[in-house]
Image (spheres, helix red, strand yellow):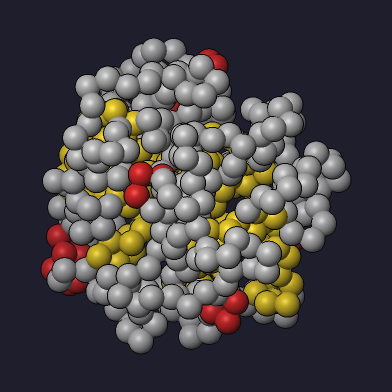
Length: 426
């Protein structure tokens, strides 16, 4: 992922899955030393292919004053985790070194949340601060494996539909109000931990705060692997969720919403025993009798093997993309999604209970030909998107399929009009 520093310096932070965050300064120069480096705290990665690693960072809204940075990464399996499980994902807070604004003080780490993983895949791991409420949103995958089933998965429903566990969810926490005292200890034998002491609170209007059997951090649920979340300028939350075998999707995430997995894959029914043969009918409601919320974007595997979530474009250099959700696929295909006629971003309901039948409608898809990047990168894989402080759009690519630290094929591209040369940083 790529994100701007948020402090007016024009710096960009580029997350590398191998465990580092690089700095591109305001002049476009890639600094030699990393901003953050958790390689010595991470699980050993598999270079040919791995979904684990350093997956995202987020600067606190008050970053220019407080230097607080949050990171989500995969650590070795913690002591006390279920035997035979794969790793422990960690949400941590760091502070910038007071003597060097381009370096994090690595001794400042505070672990907010640890999540044991039964399998190495479906980590989620995307974090972002809400532009309107200032809360931290955290996406979590269903735990891994096919069909949300097997070791570490709730047999009857899968993890994503099980509201007693945090897998397959989007969480919302308050990292500023740690005195609220409303974060209970996880249940006995839980496969997640809130770390040493209370380092975050839970917003008072989180949808399940009053139900003692449901982790209060849960904001929305029913996801398979929402590896990319982002907000538009109006504060609407988008989650790109990787499908099982047939369909990839993007959803508008609202408070308390159930997004269907593993009852559905996209808009289609899902059968645990027949992944590639969707049944004609299936449940239309979730465990609480709530309606399932469909995606706004759905694509088959003909577009690409894995969806790479993007952003609603809010810059000025590409006016033809204004208000459109730009995303792609791992194979390098780029797509722009246009909202339906009458779409009002500022008027979209914030809660599932306020959704009306016409609020969820499919956005129209159009392929984008990103010519200079295609010519310069050959058959590179698309890894992510980001934006700078002016909301201009960037894409991240690599020449290898997995997080291989022995190569240096990663590139950060700024997407510009076709008659402008796009800056390239390697």
